Length: 274
Length: 248
Image (cartoon, rainbow over all chains, first blue to last red; front, side, top):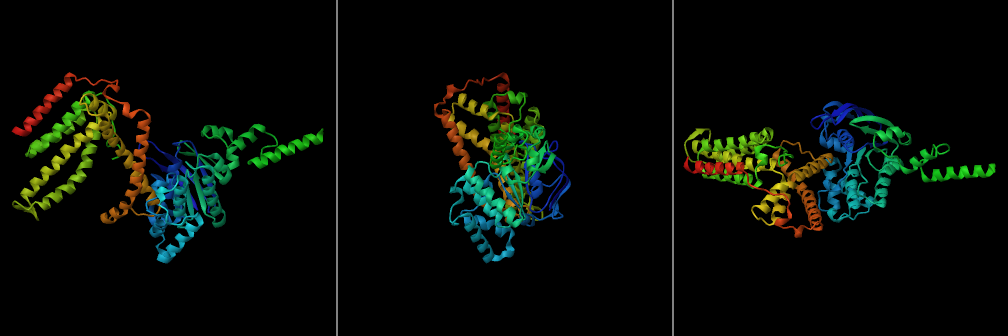
């Protein structure tokens, strides 16, 4: 469980995030939304312990991140950065996946690390001999994800994971994360500007504006609050926008299939009335 | 460190000087520091460096640069004092000649580096490039290369910070107190930094090409860089600095 208790952080003059207080339970899939500069990345860096709060505290499983060792924290929380090139530092995909394991999973031993690396290579469809920097952007993001997931963190933080990816690459990465969230109860915290992705995968949304938490609730509910979204410079996903415009009979619509069903229901009802 | 090479806007006399004059003064201070062999004169040159910073209205920047250089200076001082074995021992294995030599080396380092960083704080990079092309007739591609290299320094520092942060998130303990271990941890990070640098340079080259980089000549810049009376005064001051270094 992750707990933020009045956590604030400032890079210099003025606060970047102020008095953040919320809890994320194990197995949740949470999206952190907001305009550029709202404090989303700062919030997730506070959760990962990369930044220490200037006041308040951040606890992971009851332990303050300010006093947790880097290796221990990396074992608990994985962080997938927006730019995979910042993360990749080895010459082959195999070495890259093994790098994180060597740093934080010494308990596995040499054979265990090799076995776990092979498992991740199979799962992500790599031979292991590929040079990471010669791969496409999407493939590099997959390598970065594989090396993060290899250590089997309890929590994974995704900082704009779909930026620069095409539809198929994005779906591949998100489906894989979603599967691990469902099957292994891995907590997922995602910063994302793609509201379609948020609607498809996340179950809870937190909105940050001006460094403060201004909304926290189920994704569908948050996306239906037009005034709140306008205040946060967020445009709802197209299907939610459409259902809001159509009004009565479309309130529960969140997917194209549900929209089609609602339209058909309406048409059938109208035909029956005639 | 990240904003060390960044321009600080201002309208001081130093800001308004011709960029070529500022470069000339910088070179003169460097030359004077190497000509003189006297510690008091090196201290005077250090005061000139700081005086320029205060006159330009960027005292915090000047002191920041000095503070950054002092860290390197301490290491260099100890190393130099240990290496020079001539003279009379004054403390432990340090000799009087060693201490004097180390002081001169350290003072030269500070005196030379400070104006180099200061000139970038009080001159826009674009003005520096244009003035080098217009006044000194330097081919534009060399001026562009020089200024782009300077412009990239803070970006590379930021990039390195991002890479180190990403590796910290993976469990790499950069906060270790063992300097050799820290160096060992940082070495593998050169690969991603090099890759991103090459990619960035390639993108910059393409962006410059598509905007007619090769067509640019001395006549392409519309902004003129005339010499004012203040520039002449600085040139005179520069001559005095050199004369002082030779004569004192």
